[in-house]
Image 1 (cartoon, rainbow, N blue to C red):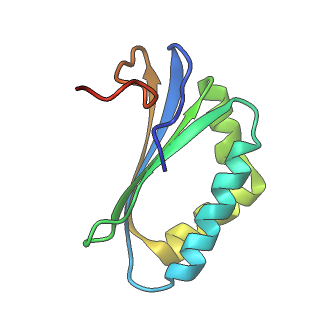
Image 2: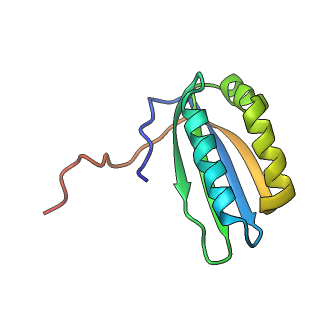
Image 3: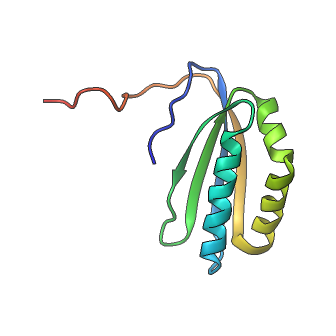
Length: 116
């Protein structure tokens, strides 16, 4: 995993924070991979970043989109609705989704030379 390449702002971020229940890890991981692959095919998708599970099973997934309508279409996509339903039934003890407009970003590009 690496830092997502994003365009000049503005663009949007869908931030998914979750605490997973115990068990069913293989099915969860398979669904996560399928949803990431599907998201990458959607109009307006820019990229994503994922923070691996902590010992208390907290994780963070951030996807980046051109605009809020792209996120709304992704939320309502049939296969994604199925994944959401399974997540609520089987995988998430708690979760929160936040949608944010990115107005500025800054940092160091991974291709920049390391300091001497």
